[in-house]
Image (cartoon, rainbow, N blue to C red; front, side):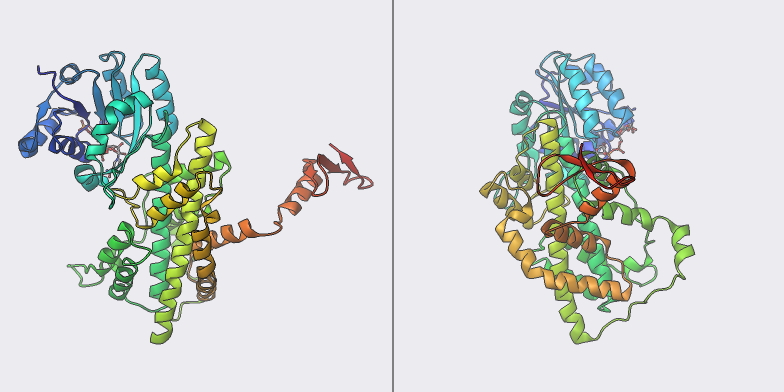
Length: 479
Ligand code: NBP
């Protein structure tokens, strides 16, 4: 058995197979392993000519094929399969070796696994990988966590196989210790949910309020893609909208059942945000919108409820409205990213990860689903000021929102009047207005809490906590 492989990949379904090919195409010798050996054989049969592969059938042979310190990447289903595979390999490894988990693990699992393996002297690198199967093959955005030492050994290889941004920078960075990489990948996916929801709302408004056809909307998105909304998701939206169903001749989007599915990372982003106390209302609305769409029986039972039906506007008005929707979409997108980066900052603070937010924006510029020209500007904002309290504190973004807000509000007025749901746009605007409000009704909430539960409140005019004797003479006591 050769011990020459610089990296091994175990788990050769769509992602693992393409990552293994990507490593090989970049000149690395790659050991291959999969629970079901036929996948390994298939890869060799179809793509063996692409580079140096060492196919193996047992865990022992796989580990023996790797040069030391061993770099062993697992690309299996997240959850119990990942634990099973780690256990199988860890017993064969030696101190200094590393296991890289490129699956979509929950960061808390990654923290646990890292701790357990560290006690055995093994590096565990929980790594976010984004870009789907095409990205895995041609260059994904890669978000590795784990120790600095492991990145020193692994980083150059990841830099080679990663996507490159337009300025040539590799879309990978050492995000931070233990679960930092998977945490950032989770928030990336949450932002992806929000981006998709906002694009969906823009589509529905253009369709129902502006009366545009899917083909016309595709053209609008193509135009938007040449401006500040330039992004992979806007680009593919135009492709999906211009596609015509071969069987019926109808726009493809009209023959697809309108019930969105989800795999869970968006939901995790919201669950963790709740734990950290970070308002990610845009991401939450996106998760809820998918969930609502799937309640077919509830929707069926509710279709007859009273409310306006959209009445599409005339040509001239429609063109102006489309421009307004672009403003609303862009402003809402700024808010989604503001919320997502807030969650990363809060996670970094909670777990002591010291995540560089500018670098995170930088590695999302290529390879991943949310890649967008806009991310360059986020990077610039954090480069200019690493401790930026919020993206909305950046002068350029604040000015853009200031310029967009009249249209943003008008779009929501039109949506509300015509009964078109736009929860993402509305949540983003409510967040923006709440942040800039002089006073919030939270003061009343505190009063209510003190009334029914003696939870106390703080005052605007002096320090300390207070309670009003609501059931008595209503005098105030210091708590
Ligand atoms: P899947 O998530 O479908 O997992 C299939 C792989 O897991 C196969 O190699 C399978 O082996 C292996 N596996 C399972 Br299932 N249970 C196992 C066990 N108990 N022991 C050993 N191996 C086991 O593959 P994927 O879609 O390529 O994704 C791989 C990872 O990458 C996942 O964690 C996924 O969440 C993540 N990811 C996916 C994408 C994407 O676009 N698909 C993007 C980014 C990240 P078998 O062949 O023997 O059944």
